[in-house]
View 1 (cartoon, helix red, strand yellow):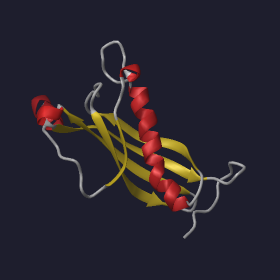
View 2: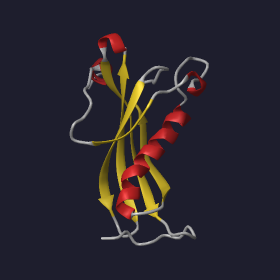
View 3: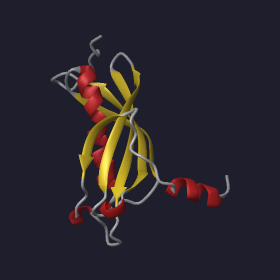
Length: 139
């Protein structure tokens, strides 16, 4: 793909997915932005980590902790006023770990809504007991 094709693909309007589970929605505020008016990448990463843990907590039936961020891609900047929707899909369930893919979509311009995928990530969580030690995932 050429650079122009990649840009066109990245900016092509998307729609909110219907085949993934919506786990969180949030509206970034001015305090979450940098000097350019874009939302801090670290703020988005923290939200992705929270959203990514929703399904593992359900599956593990208790505490989980993030052990790896396997992939994290910022596809588009996020602006104040974008309504962010976080969708999660379980990719793998092991003995103690669960790997999740999180996709983040921004709904922009309420008068003429545009939906764009802004971030995608792949994270691994481990089920832990009260002492913080790994534990088996119930089957």
